[in-house]
Image (cartoon, rainbow, N blue to C red; front, side):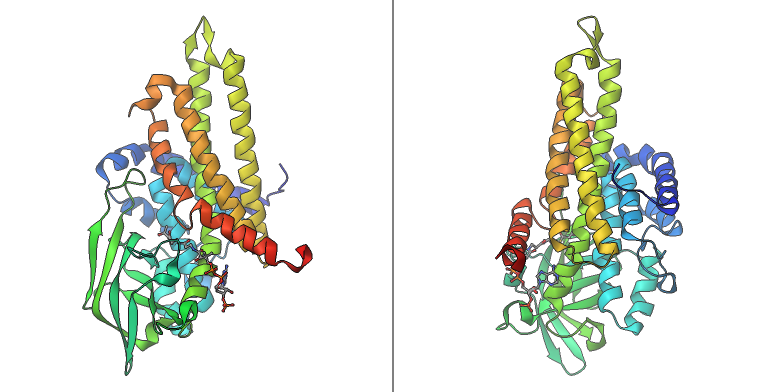
Amino acid sequence: MLFNLTEEQLMIQSMVREFSRKVVAPTASERDKTKEFPAKNLKQMGELGLMGMMIPPEYGGEGADTISYVLALSEIAYSCASTSVVMSVQNSIVCESILKFGTEEQKKRFLVPLASGEIIGAFALTEPDAGSDPVSQTTTAKKDKDEYILNGTKRFITSGQNCKVVIVTAKTDESAGHRGISAFLVPKGLAGFSVGHVEDKMGLRASDTTDLIFENCRVPAENILGKEGDGFKIAMSGLDGGRIGIAAQSLGVAEAAFDASIRYTRQRKQFGCSISKHQGIRWQIADMATQIEAARQLMLSAAAMKDRKEKFTTQASMAKLFASEMVNQITARAIQLHGGYGFTKDYDVERYYRDARVFTIYEGTSEIQRIVISNNILKDKRNQ
Ligand code: CAA
């Protein structure tokens, strides 16, 4: 392995692996059926310091590095992708955005309970008609003395129902393009703020995905995150970190599907021997292991760049693109290797296949990652 993980990183990985397999895994399949939000597991994860891993201890976090975070997130995804998406959104796009752009007062009020896992947070950028192109969003925030009045609908919001606070983007200047978008910390319970439709999804069924509706919702002006017009930058830089997290989730689910495939192909006998003895199967195993290892290295490399405080946007998109496409191939192969059994609910590979499907879509589709990667390569002076 290219990366020499430190003692501390290995210790965190092994602690989370044990917790994940003992506590999170046994109920994952049931949660997939009932769609029950993993509130109890998330509470325990908060106690273990997994909900604000990269946040300094003075703001309720663990002060861990990004490498430790992605190792931990992969371990949770290995057992339950629904639980891992809540952990991912909370750690990166919610907590890290407040750490980076919040005032001291906002950090005390919102970051401390979020990073310690006391409350769940959400991030609301997407709208019914603004997904890949968030600049076309139509939610507005009009200043009225010491308040902003929010109007609009956000869509596909992870933890929309179960969260206590949401970072909401809205237009404060409709004529200024991306520079007219601002971000606000909006707690639940404000008048004019409600949860709308809850999606019935193909995968990640125990994580709620909802509409959030703002109807003349008055938000105190002190709740603006950053300055007026910073919202797009906050979203984009939050997504940089978030995308490494999607690579980590992809890796975790792919490893689970791979391990299940190894167990099955060893135990399943056809033509007088384990199917793992057939060359056609062995070559598939070799390809799967190679794809998984390549994704792991891309994920670790992007995380290491972030830890070194280098610009990592391109590498985060590469890791997200490659790992999310990889896990879709691996989980499809895992079903194929399980034959007819893989198509039933008796084997976990069926759940892995459904859970993985959204990884090439959320936090920027594969097509958007290719735009980010190619834009950055073409504008790099070294390539001109
Ligand atoms: N960090 C900081 N700032 C950034 C940035 C980054 N990574 N990328 C761009 N910016 C800034 C630029 O500097 C520029 O600012 P200035 O003009 O002030 O210099 C501004 O943003 C616009 O940049 P571009 O011109 O490059 O932006 P664009 O409009 O051409 O392209 C895009 C942007 C990459 C297509 C972007 O719109 C994008 O990523 N779209 C996908 C949105 C997305 O990922 N949605 C997922 C929803 S969230 C989600 O899924 C969470 C969940 O619940 C699981």
